[in-house]
Structure formats: C-alpha cells, structure tokens
Image (spheres, rainbow, N blue to C red):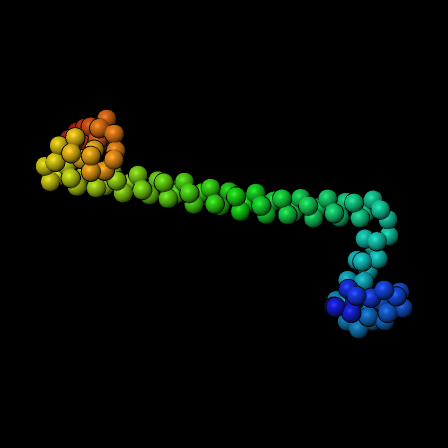
Amino acid sequence: WLRLIRSEKEEEIEMLATKTPEMEAAVGRLKQLSADERTQMLYEARQLFLMDEQVRRADARAEGRAEGKAEGRAEGKAEVARNMFAMGWDAEKIAQATNLPVSDIQKLISSLTEK
C-alpha cells in the first residue's frame, strides 16, 4: 500500500494493480477520483461531511454524559434528603446539608407524606 501511495509513475501504479484484487480496486478508485475536478470536489465534500458528523456525534455523546452526571447528582441528593427526613431532620437542616433549596426539600417531603 505504501508503494501505491508513494508511486509517481503510471507504469508502477499499473503493475501494483495486478498484485491483488484489493489493490486493483484501489487503483481503479484512484483513477476515478483523479479523473475530473468535479468528482474530486464531491469526494472532498463528502469527506468533510463525514468528519463533521463524527464531531457532532462526539459532542452529543459528551453532552449526554454531562447531563447524565448532573441527573445522577440530583437523584443522589434527593435520596440523601429522603433518608434525612426519615431520620427526623427538618427541611432547613436537610437543605443546609444537601445544598438543595428549601422549597425543593419541602416538595420532596410533601410527596413523601402524601403516600
């Protein structure tokens, strides 16, 4: 493959194409792409699109992980708050310990006492 990439003479490329079916296909594709400027531009545009798509997917995965971590932290704090309430703590102390707003603690307590 390196010989193909580094080849500068048409004869050498043709000789390499006879080595394996894969090499023949690669040489055929190379000829096709280098045949006209429009095809080259389309190929490059497609490659750019694919690279952009990979970046978008990576960004989306990273964003999803960050959101998941934030949700996990919030759920963890809510669980701690429920346990503190079960142990007899009041809303003010729970809010101080968890850094959750008192209003959120009161809603949580209300939902627990309604059951």
